[in-house]
Amino acid sequence: MQICAYLVSHHSEPASSPAADESAAAQRLDAVLAAHGLTAVSTTSFAGPGYAGTRRALAQEATADGPPQLERVRTALAADLDSDARDGQLHALVPAALIEAPRKLLVMDVDSTLIQQEVIELLAAHAGREAEVAAVTEAAMRGELDFAGSLHARVQTLAGLDAGVIETVRAAVVLSEGARELVEAFHAAGHLVGVVSGGFQQILTPLADGLGLDFARANDLGIADGVLTGTVSGEVVDAATKEACLRRWAADAGIPVKHTIAAGDGANDLLMVRAAGLGIAYRAKPALRAAADAAIDVPRLDIVRHLSGV
Image (cartoon, rainbow, N blue to C red):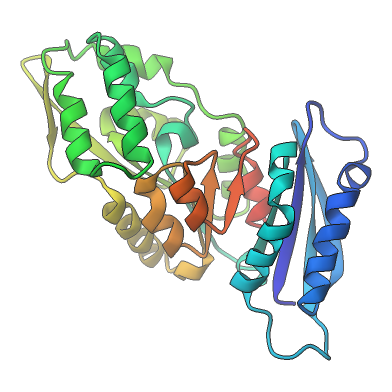
């Protein structure tokens, strides 16, 4: 057994017969896999609120020439099945070694991944600068701007706000659908979960504590005399920092990097998504989507657990 193939369908209600709903895509999936010398030796079904899917454990046929190349098969699947994403289906190939790993580490981005909002935009709304800041955030997430520079510029717009705005914004943060279920599933199976954010520690710490996360890192908003200074204290958490956190947390826990999963939505998540054993683009910008091993467009973060074999 070398690779696991996933096919997930999004439904307005949980599907009563997932196999019937995905039969055409499943046939095309199996055809592509067979063309690369891979056959299913077992199939497992799973479902959640609004989605259902299957995981095929694959073995290479004895007559096949050479081992299957994961990226080559992914490319072939993308060419044949990517149009199904517009119809609410996703496909993914995951190394069996990750699925079978006894301990795993999941590291996620926060804004627009773990939570539904961009915290900097919520803060900027209190300064009357939300539209301006949102435009810069969008460009930064597409990879069109230097992240650190864009963060400093956006944070400057917050100068002079009463620090009490942090608590107001914290109360407005909403977890992504399935986020709590995802964390609980990983912890129940004995795995670890961390988050690393280009957002702010003052918002992240209580959120991480409430979810019982194992690791959490973000930027520190400057505060003096009860008001925001419009600065960030210390080194900015950028793409390189996110990758470094993934690697350091894995090493500290004695977990090989090939047994890690990373999920995010923007260009500043690209390095950690590439570094992880399984890199997932969650409702992501094109730059990250192109670099990821799998893309989830369905608005349910707990699909990550199934792709990770949890």
